[in-house]
Amino acid sequence: MTARAGTDGGTDDQGRHRREQPRTDYGGAVYGALLAASVVAGTGALGPYRRVGLVLLLLVTGLVFWAAHVYSRLVGERETYRHPTRAVISGVARQEWPIAQAAVPPAVAVAISPLLGLGLEGTAWFALSVALAEQIGWAGAAEVRAGGSRRRVIASGVVNLVLGLVIVLLKAVLHEH
Image (cartoon, rainbow, N blue to C red; front, top):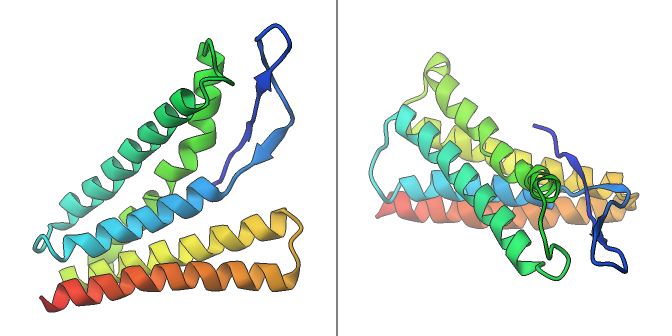
């Protein structure tokens, strides 16, 4: 998965959309990985899913949340995007795409889990681990790319580890009940 660079455009004095320098926003990738971890954790409460069902659930959830973020940006930033053109809409869609992309590594983990001899419970833990590693990795990459100090990179990793561990704890609790 790659967090894509997008443009964060504003409007000029005549209300026309203008392009600014590309920026990389890893927030969507971090958010998407946390979302994927939540999906995997939540499946324990719903009973054992077949692997294909979990793969589809991960991918469709990623796409739905991506679409929701695109829509909310276009509506929420109505002042910036007064008259959204196809180019503006596709630019926002590209910027938000890491949310959907973040579902792919855990989905792949689920898909290959039989090759590793994992049962359904092991598959869920494997996919959850992949999502957590992805989340921490993207957060660290964002800090490095932003020129953050070593301390900030570590702090970002720790914050994301704690967020991920909350999801792991949720999975463990849901599995118990």
